[in-house]
Length: 303
Image (cartoon, rainbow, N blue to C red; front, side, top):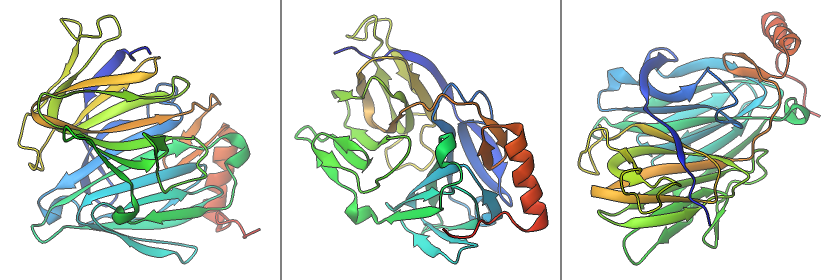
C-alpha cells in the first residue's frame, strides 16, 4: 500500500453565484486538468436567509453532471422538462445534464435559519455530452452508513467502500464520494483506487493528512487546521486537500475530530471548452450551444 502525497491545499474562497448566494468555492473555472474529471466544487452555507434565499434561478447546463448534497435546510429544484423535487438534510441529487436542461435551485433554511450544502460538477466524456438528461434523487435514509468501533462514521454516497455500495449508479466518472467523520485523536486509513484523481474537503474540525515520504506524519505531515471549532459549529473549516498518486489516504483527527468529504474519479483526459454551466470539448460546440440558447432550440427532443 502507498500513501497518497498531499500535492496542494488551500482554503475555499468567498464568492457569489446565482441571484446573490454567498458561498465558498474550493475550485472551479481554472485548470480543468488538476481535478479531472471534476470541474467545480462549491460549499454553500449560512445562518442568515439573506445569504442564500435568492437562490439559483433558471439557468442552463449541458455536457456535465452536478451532484448536490444537503446537510441543513432544503433545496427546491425544478427544470424545463417538468421535473420537480425537494432535497432535505442528508439528501443527494445527481443530475446528468447531458444534451441540456434549464433548471433552478432555491434553498431555504431550517428552523434555526441554517442552510448548508455542497455542489460538485463532474465532466462528461465526449460520447456522453449529448446524452439524455437524467436525475437521481436519493434520500438520506437510503445512504449506507458505516460505524466503526472507534467512532469513525463513513457515509457511502457514491461508489463501493468497505463492503457498502452507494445508491447512485451509472455515473461516467466512476466516482467515489464519501462523507467521513473521524473522532478526536484517531488515525485512520482510507483506500482509494490509484487510477483515480482524489481530493478531500474538510468542512468541520481539523486534522493531519500523512505525507507519502513520511507515513508516520512527523515533520512532513500536511496539517489542515483553518478555524478549529466545535463539530456542530456552522462556520467550520473550508479546506481543500488535493492528493497525488497512491492507493490510500491517511488522516489523524485533531482535538475536535475532523469531518470531510473524500471524492475520487477516473480522469477523462479530453479537451475542455468551458462557458459557464456549459462544458463541451471544442469552441465550436460552445458556439452552437449559445446559438441554441438564443433561438430556443437548446432543449433537445427525447429519443
